[in-house]
Amino acid sequence: MKVIPLAFESMGVRSMATFVETDQKILIDPGTSIAPKRFGYPPWKTEFEALHETRARIEEYAEKANIVTISHYHHDHYTPFELGKFLDSSPESAQKLYQGKRLFIKHPTSQINKSQQKRAAEFLKNLEGLNCKISYCDGKSFEVGDTSIKFSNPLPHGSQGSKLGYVVAVTIIWNGKSIMHASDVQGPIYGEAKDAILEEQPDMLILSGPPIYLAGFAVERKDIEKARSNLIEIAEQIPEVIVDHHLLRNLRYRNFIKSVEKESGGEIMVASQLIGKEPNLLEARRKEFYRA
Image 1: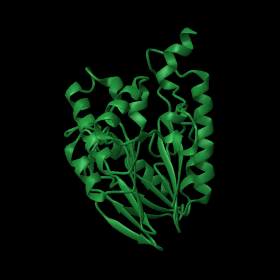
Image 2: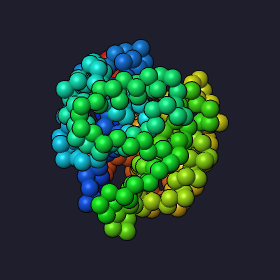
Image 3: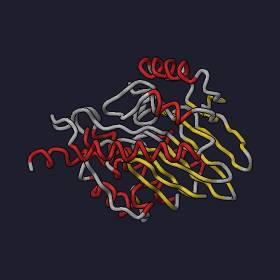
């Protein structure tokens, strides 16, 4: 099974876009974006360069893919059809991604907050006429060729009761191996998200770490500690763990990872290291770029 990270915070943008090749070619969460404001500053020029590069990479792999999965309707996890300066998206680029694909997508009206429900409705309207085969995937399993694709029940976007809505994790099983991609579980903070991961026991897990950059104001510190405790338990049982996304919006992410490794005895990577590249954090360094 080939696993290729396409866009992540360790690659300079907000994203968890991943390409998985079995006897199928699967594109997971094909979105990329950058934060309009961080530390009071707009994006630095290198962030726009990373946005263009990752958008081109996602489009390149979309041409190869026959399956696209979408965990939820935040713009860093799918490509909308509307123009977006901080998304580098357009109707033409979105059409290229989805035309003729088999789409497994989060249910547009069940266990979803209002903003994502609106986005989902617009997204589905724009897919009309693109010859897509669409399946709502929440809690379901599918067999495509020799590949099994299994989706979790909706999990909170972070802690239980999160106003940010719900996400679905996907597990891909082929040739006796499995990979699980758990977008925006943020740690995971929620205990049942941890349980869902451990129940699958994937050979490789890719998940979003906790948003330590929001600790103490938008996210309670006790939730960050819950995420750390849950991740320790995960790293004790799953052989290959890749943690990225929210966690890497803070330069102190290494301290968090080291503390988990020390207590779990496991080894944790970030997504860029899967392709032999050192992490290239841009949003977390935005203040540094401006002050320099």
